Length: 365
Ligand SMILES: C[S@@+](CC[C@H](N)C(=O)[O-])C[C@H]1O[C@@H](n2cnc3c(N)ncnc32)[C@H](O)[C@@H]1O
Image (cartoon, rainbow, N blue to C red; front, side, top):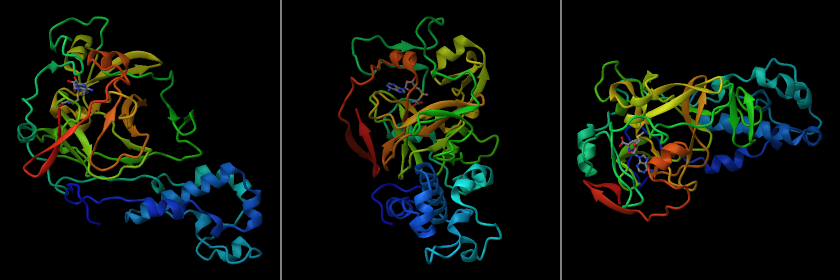
């Protein structure tokens, strides 16, 4: 498929729109009588299973066909078992299957292992080159307030930890075994039983001692360039369409309990244990971090396209809306740090002007 967007070697442009329509129907696999006995919950569940399977298959990824899709309904009276020639499982009514379904779905059916081994993708250019092209001064311990010119510029490390917070933090439930499903607006112990597991995008695997480690871990289809946010430095952009419920991470960095240090770098996430602040994961040192250190903070809900969450002591980012190609990935750092950055949620609607360097499109302040 032709694309006007820059393409990372080995990357696919994903367009699931046709798939979405087709997958949103399970009529061909059940009789009218069977369908009429199913709850909305069951119907949605089968649709999701079909969608996940077909998306994986369309990408050429290993996917296990759900049992209910293995035989098509050819007549309302035909029994399910007779139709099924490649399954030795006895067919049971959907309502009876519901209880055991979850245990029987292999996790791999849903995972989206965009995993790249060393050498499989071309490494991104050197950080210095990227900074030069984007007209960004090499990274310093510096945080600039982006919205109000009267606001002071803080240079770190400069002050002891105070009430102002310059590390990222989010509300974490007492038990971080639980996963919150934004679609259901509920927490579940493990994956959501209605919408299934998140689609997992893994970091690119790198050699242990690779310099600029954080950049080389970029998954295919993402790239680094100047942020769309004025004075925010570099940021992470999508080269292809990313669907909601896609998970990135975990956020990698040095594990530390040093509060002052976490304050000073601007790259630390606070981790909670039993609902209480415990330690930090600080991604300031590039050779201990991954690409997630470059994800910037959204200035308003509209531009936020990822949610940060803690699960089993680690921080992940997941998408909660479709992210179109050529869009910056933006997460919410939490109230305190955002305030530190001069972000008052909902107030900034700065128009962004594109410009081009060496054929690559950037957005200027
Ligand atoms: C985790 S880093 C993000 C990557 C950073 N842009 C870089 O080039 O390394 C956090 C820092 O990015 C900058 N930043 C992130 N979001 C911002 C925003 N909305 N406005 C201004 N600066 C922002 C701040 O300097 C902040 O301390």
